[in-house]
View (cartoon, one colour):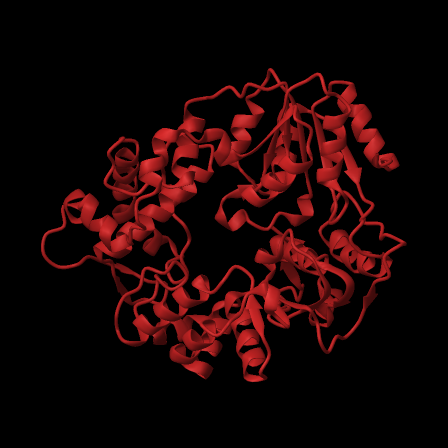
Length: 491
């Protein structure tokens, strides 16, 4: 039996007192092991462990005692009656627009409607593009605890961010989004059901989970829809574990359930700060970012792990801020004759390349990153003005061309055969490698023109923290040296 650390023992004792509880667990600090110890300490009670994804759930099921039901949020909500609709072939936005009859919903007769863009031009809104926006809107609403779809659930698309474009977009998208949900609620819907759709239906039914204790893992990235259900389980003792400093998915609707548990339940917060993943050198680099965002804990490196920080010529993994940055590294690696793997596969970068190709050929695209632009020249113009990922994408496409990028994507190998693994920082979450280099597309924030202050968005700082804590033995974070110039972080 593993002897708990002093922090783990305190958590087990707090559970024994019957308290709802929040555990702030830093990177590599044994949060799942602590939950397992809690479960093993009390075999009399039924427990439900809620995992972030299926892989984590399956690992937990192998090690947790039989008194614990290991589920994902979707697993809690699933009903076999949804199986047939989930197994339908993928439905494109164009097919969905035809099935739902978007033009009829909006009363469109004749020419395609258009809306203003941020740059002053007009963006044609085909049925396909309207449907894509409507489906994105439904998805964001499904991640929320809201009971009604409103314009605040419409995503913010580059090129369509100003008040007038947003208002015109809402006039087209909201009626279709509401019609889409009405259809999805039917047993014989014309639209394809997804896992997030039935999770929302379950949450709206105000379910009761048959358990004595709820153990929520990776709570910092829990959507409000699931968080709301768990907070409503007043019959159960609730324990949420996670790392607020690793909250990196707010852009797709995830919220920090740790904060919600403290606010709604008034429960105490304990820390797990001893990392078992890396030694003091990497822990010190992680603490730079934790101090910057004023996180509730600081990491202690594991003395038994010898870790170093400095330049690396041959890292096991290179972590990038953007898909375009990752693909740039992939192409360099392939050109050098190396076997390269891309975490998460090539679907995302292929879709970006196809979308760019469509705009270059004068065709519209419904890709969420490029949908707001009428042409590739408009993307170029916008990328010069904004300080973000589009500049990296434009440089990649203009330097290599979509044909070479697509060919490179098809030349990748499986990770088990790779000499180099490339990943975005988002996809690296939950992973670790012996030697990690941070790529230079983690861009330094520009000084404010009025104040001169160098302000970094908080989620960007959290993403950098996630990236540096993927290394077990060697870390090259030279690309993040600009952190010393950051004045403050902002929401």
